[in-house]
Amino acid sequence: FDSADEFREIQAFVAWIVSSLGLHMVKIEKKSFRLGMQDVVSQGVRAIVMGQRFGDPFTPTSAFSPSTEGWPAFMRINPILEWSYAHVWTFLRCFGLPYCNLYDDGYTSLGSSGDTIRNPCLRRPDGSYAPAY
Image 1: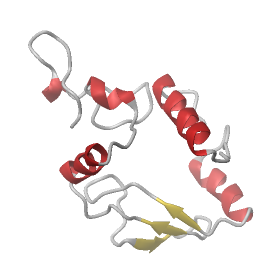
Image 2: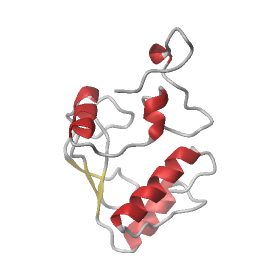
Image 3: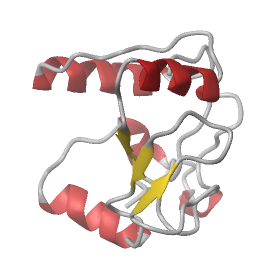
Image 4: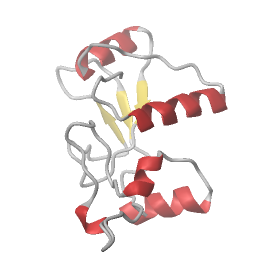
C-alpha cells in the first residue's frame, strides 16, 4: 500500500528487499486499505501473512482468523501473534535478518511519517537515541 506519508527509509528498505529476493511487488496506490484488499482478493489472493502481536491495535485472537465482517474475504495468518517484543528482536538479530534502519535510531513502532516519533524512553543524555532492541 503506497502512502505519500511513508518514511523514505521504509520505501528504500522495501525496494531493497524486493530486489534482493527477486520478488514481484504489487503496489496499491491511492486507495484505502479496504478497497486495496478488495482488489488483491479479486486477483485470487486468499490469505495474507500478518506481523501483528497481542497488544497491537486491532489484534486478532488466533493464529488464523478470517477478515472482519464487511471486508473482502481472506484469511489472516498471524505467525508471531504470541511473540513478545523481545522475541521479535531476538529472532531478527540471532539470525542476522535485515530490518529498516529507523529501528536503529530510536523508533520502536513505524507508522506514517506525520505521526510517528522516536521512543522518548530511548533518548540518551547526549540527545541521540538507543536502538529499538
